[in-house]
Length: 547
Image: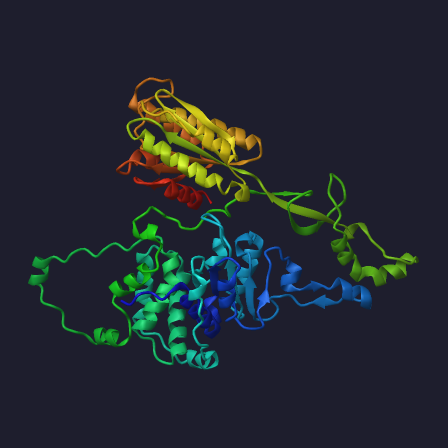
């Protein structure tokens, strides 16, 4: 198998395939604003429409043109950005709110010829384009590490001729089944992935002016499936030589000969093509059951009427601190001015109570990550060092993501809050300079202290999250007695009280512990086995799992 093409060449090819077949949906491009991204977006060409994460429904679907309405004296509507098929370019895609993601997703599902180029400037793990929208885009390419010297566009392709050839390009009979089996092997649960791979193979063959062959299948599968993979395929079991020797080989059939001529690749070559583009932690067998974040990398959304990101105004009456949206109120009153002027018998603008529109805002609550670390036993120093490094990694991004951290360590017969909730990196480094370790494992006491910190955070309007780091060998009950059975029961009982809190249980033992998996299920959290996790992997695991 040939080496995979560099990211910039893959991104340029993805844009060409989108131009040939708009049914591919679009491209998520991870890149900061700069000359590399500008060199690629220049291939989009004129006519693209730029969106903004804060666009409202009037801008998307059309609505009242207030200036033209007031000037003409009758209602004048403006066309929205989605009125005609076009290439939609969405900068700052990582800030896309769920409402806009749903509207753009519905537009792509309608199949009216729209394409979406999402320019994702995500700063780290746990951020990025909403999963509901990225699932509808066939391609996902990261240009964040591409130097400017490698940002060279290939010669322009003949898109018009490729579009004419697309309808006449047929899929091999065996290819849909082969692609479907490949998605299952890589743990891809979305049926769109297989459909995108087939469409990309047809578009690539049309672009190259031939039929779908092995090269087209390999390239299409790598472009559409690699970024969606959640696991490496299990190796095929070795053949039983004795059983194989007893059975004669089956005679070749017509379907086998047809499969050889269809251009379908052997499964091993397709797996290698996709594996060449997988992230290193997936190839190492890291436990990432779900590579998508559960949130947007920040606290929960709260609505208010004083501060935050503006939301569409809603009808209402002034009061309770709500402020009037003057422009929206005038927009609502404008269509009725001619009728009201005749009935009111007085000149001037006529505003009624039903016209009043009130401002609304949306802001994010702060998030608290409660690290609960096992400081017992001979491996305590390693676990504490990992936790200390992860805390510092997360706090380095605290000011942009509104993260607070809290560190609870348990050993001996009880637990101690070593670091109260804070965002101060200087204070954190000073308090984490020397931490105690060694002794028994009072897991229930650690969970009880973490539950207290979580309850206090909720009272302050924060969004708490639990990260438990242990090897699972609890041997001290909640009352301080050495009883493994009672210790496990106390830990499970307290874990059930945390079921409403997002939680991540990290098993740092040399072998996975079934008791910790059961503990994660008791608190409705996630279980992850990281026997050799360093500070970087630990902080990435927390960001990925907790969003």
